[in-house]
Length: 122
Ligand SMILES: [Zn+2]
Image 1 (tube, rainbow, N blue to C red):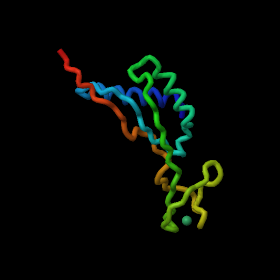
Image 2: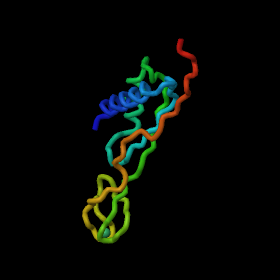
Image 3: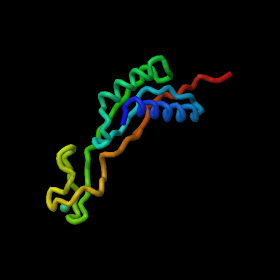
Image 4: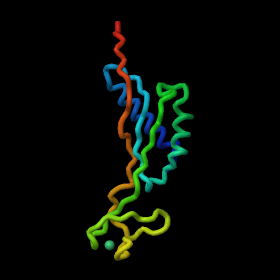
């Protein structure tokens, strides 16, 4: 997946949210959850975000990325395990192929920090 397209989608989502708020919140920080198995590079995402938000309503807003590890569940063993990305996608106990991913594919906004703007609208 391309970080540039992802960032575009992220900005649109935040914009929609902001426009739906009555108080016209001043966003200060966006917390993202990015799974290790999404192939999204946090560094690339940070860079794309900085470039695309320059001189927009998100100018100077901080992007905080929290990565989640890849966790799979083996139904044979009834246990969770951590597949090695790029090396082995199978249960270390019984070698069943990975088929039930429990975490690591997330790509979502965790929360947005903002200050409500109480300036009256005349
Ligand atoms: Zn197993």
